[in-house]
Length: 134
Image (cartoon, rainbow, N blue to C red; front, side, top):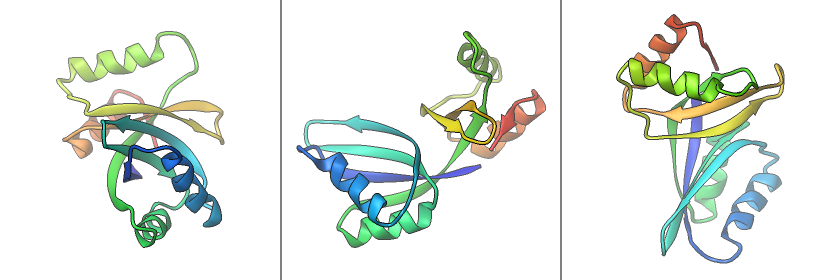
């Protein structure tokens, strides 16, 4: 299971760069991210090398942050593998809140980072179906 940091930021020019600058200054590596926005604010979700350190540094700079669990599912880098994973989840009656891409630097394979309300159950389900989880 992965820990991800969710950062609530104003939807303004340079907002993402300010976040990445803070992480850079703390020597925290971003391994995957997704950004959702609205007219006034955005939610940046990231898998980083040190989630707790990132949360502390960003909070110190005035950002509202929270840590949450996410699943990292390693897949082969071949056409149709995301569809295969999503089909497995659908057949297992799993709802996904969101999904984004990361990369396993050790194996060279893509990692699908996903969040679901029943994270422990889904982790067990996917392991039982032969998936590699981080």
